[in-house]
Image (cartoon, rainbow, N blue to C red):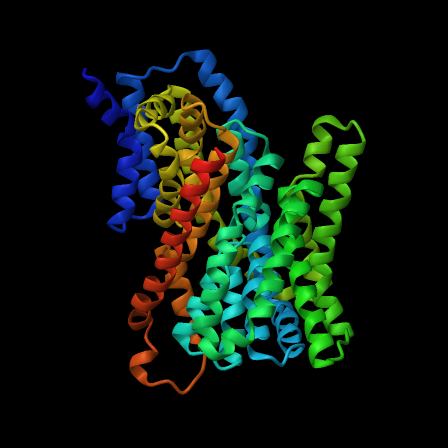
Length: 485
């Protein structure tokens, strides 16, 4: 078999999954078909010995279990907080704390949106922020675009399972990957922040809000890096978002002389987040300071604390007992398909790594020379756009990315970080996220004309703007990959 045909065979599973997803075949079916293709390719050209198979299963099993539990716990927490009205209570208090239009938009899109996405993920940031943006007078299209552009911390979404997958399959340190992903998030902030203001409030008001925008970026970026260094990736997105929210509220307090008060209702709504953050923080510190071995890793796992918080959220936010079964059922219906599909992509990535197809593709890609480094974020963005998941993109490409970087004599950590950020940024333009944003915006009230109220009529302009931002981010990250890696 010629080298060209062998390269095509090695890449067939990825080409198949991309092609099937592009023609709107479900992610589950696409992943299953690609796993079958990967098995055939392995049997014919890239056999796996028994020792490698056992080692891969032992390494992949705990990771797969943790990721699945993170997803299920995140969905459960989101369902409980949404149904209880806790999300609405917190969000409306935040928007009432600012009067400046540009400042409120920044608070919602770069504070509320990334916080909700960091803690629970799966589009909750968009679901929470769009009604708030509509509440302050934005149109359906503008609110959908602004909310999607606010997905700036997706590498840390749902306590960072996508970044965890990338680190494990790419063979790099999880915490260091979080730090470098934070470093490469600066282009995302610099591109998305002015776009949010221009779209949401127009040029005149955007110019008036330049100081606020600079302050937000100047606070969020170093806070994100510091949180990854000190606390680790699982908490980094949530902590950076909280610090950013506090900074905007402080600016509003000084400039607008607003008085901020916390009542019992708001305090109760914040309790689940407090349990999650404090629990993760204390358990992480205990793991670092004490030699707890495997028990320490379990105690500090985001999966454990998301499940604990999801369970405690029922009494903390006073959900009625008769509503609990329905919430458990709805969270299972939402979470299980996502968890199953993510697990399939993990299996696909593990199979390709074990069979050596990822390494073969990496060697072939390295033939492009340094040009390939420029393409790494774009490849990640394509994976994020197609799968609608940074976990899926990480499972598909992480192993080959680090192997290609090593072959080229480049730094695999920084190369993988650019892929991680590129894939995550592309989620704002992925069809599932756009459809979610447009449907939430269409479900809100308003007096727009009927032709502006359908989801289909809004999808095209929304997609154009966020896809433009995604492409710009991927290009800048490609240049940075060449310079840093």
